[in-house]
Image (cartoon, rainbow, N blue to C red):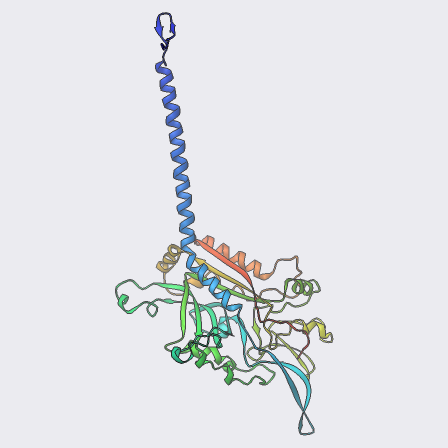
Length: 391
């Protein structure tokens, strides 16, 4: 078989030099475009991966905290309430009772320390942590006192002995976890039927003592943390209904105390039958029992706890540490998160919490800090909110 070759004017057909140069230029341009796309994709992938890795420890700590917070319990029961009639104790009513506690709010009130900032939360949960593992290790549901707060400090006590003096000391803000073993729980030493009025910090010793010890049962679960905000709430439907009526939310200044003995709580009603609510809460009409009953925290767990954790990356944390003295990590939240939602704020209006978040973000941006905010609503499994008791 023969293949014929076309001729034009006696010469064989072929690409001209110009055509070859144009083809080469097009191929080169395509290669440049493909190379640029691959580089951009690689940079985007590395950037996204580095951001995920930078905040992975904070995410893990956040998830661990919210998971354990959801297991909080008060083991509430109903018992007779006695009054003195003619020198004798006579039963008057059935009231909710509990020997356990749930408390949250400003850490400056809960456990004052110059290195602690924003909020803290402390409670009991069946987590089964014990010191005597040989004798009690099989009892997985023993109660423990647990808690979370943010603390600034160096890592001298956190590093293993073989690293002491070998690497530079790092000062950071950290999410701390209190883990009090079942054998050391002191909450049962408190009087569950104590005086129905605020008392001194002695009512807080069930977790304060552990925090003040030299070898305290506390560990760091996340580094580079600059804020922890704990906001106990009613369900969204109940909360919005109260706000639209101009009524106070459950914890308008973030404080929640199931014992109502630790702070200067709000008091309404008569002197003989006071209605005591969380600090900062208000009742529109003291004669309307449904108003106070809806937000009465006595021996009750909050149905929902909104948890917000603010983390920064390691480069930003190192830069802040290099700028000066201690105390720099709470500069972004100073003066903020004191009031969550002022009474009278309607459901379609911005809360003070929202405003404070924006202010904090602006401070972080101004300081050229890379940050991440983790927020979720934790449903407390053991919460069975009741409006049957108003005193």
